[in-house]
Each structure stands twice: as C-alpha cells, then as structure tokens.
Image (cartoon, rainbow, N blue to C red):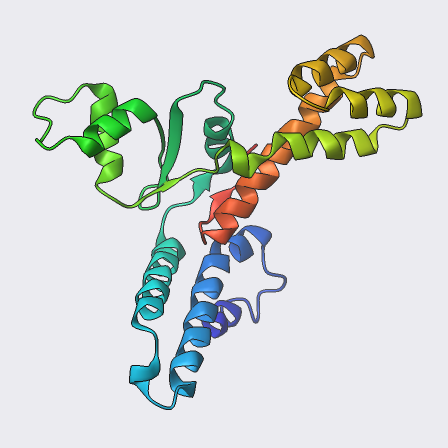
Length: 220
C-alpha cells in the first residue's frame, strides 16, 4: 500500500497534504494487518491463538479496511452532534456512508427491547431501527468529552492570579459549571472559555475519528 502511494508521487514533487490524509487509513490498515500476521506466525501452534482475540482482531481489521475505502466524514457534523445540549439524546456515525444521526435514547431502547417488529415506525423509531441494524458507531459521550477537565485546563491558562484563584474555587462541589461561567462573565472572559471549550470538543472528535480509522474533512 505504501509503495503504491509513494510511486505515484516519485516524480511529481512534494505530496499534497490532502492526499496524505486520504491515504492515512490505508496505511493504518496495512500496519495493523502486518502486526497481527506477525503475532499469528510467531505462535508455535496456530491453535494456541486465543479465538476470542482472533475474532476481535479480524473485526478490527475489517473496520479498518472499510475505512480505507469509505467516505470522508465531516468533522463539523461530528462536533455539532457531540455538542447537543439536551439530555436523553444519543448520536451515532454510519461508518459506511459517513452520515451522523441523533436519536432519542428512549426511542432506541424501546425499539431494541420490543419483542415484535415495528410495522409503522415514526421518524424517531425509523432512525433507531436503522442504527440497530448495525454499522453505526456511538459518538463520544459527555464522560469522554470531560468538560470539567477542560475547565481545569482553561484555569491554568488564565494569566490573572486573582481570577485564576476565584475560578479554582468556583469549580469545587455541586453547581461548578454555573459558578465557573458566572465568574468568567463578571470578569468579561466568558467568550474565551467558549473558544477553549469548542477547541476541546474538536480535539476529542479528531482523536475519536483517528482511533476508529475514519477519514474526515477538518471543516470546523
């Protein structure tokens, strides 16, 4: 894979950045395949390879192979879905099409737990049914995003010692987010926090897409 990529640019000068990004999933797939092949060959007896691990690794390779030829995903769409404020919503990405969809967790659970097929699903149920058919990945949730950690990293960047101390006190205990934003609003620094938070969300989305081997357009 790497050789075919480099051969295409051997006589044409520097490799365009967008071409490198397009080929990264292919390199990752090839690397994972080589690593796993080495593990299997290193075993004295193929039967000694853990079958559960084998199935897991083969599934991972299948996903990487799909990502190497799959559509590019909009980073903006992923970030916007992650940022939805309402409780009870879950967002997913269709690996095959790059589509992002958000559904009520209640609808998803209702369809999943139903013992009889839903004959005339409403809009929410139709999306839930599509997601449950497989091939969809759950986007990072609030725990993975860790906005509390983002508040702490923002405080470390504040140059004013007095404000830094007030903010550090504000995030202690219940109601930390509200007190934190109130303190920043009084200091006229609230917009700086929103920029920092948005950049944090974008970085979480980038790391997640790269970990899943999904090519994306950095369109935020």
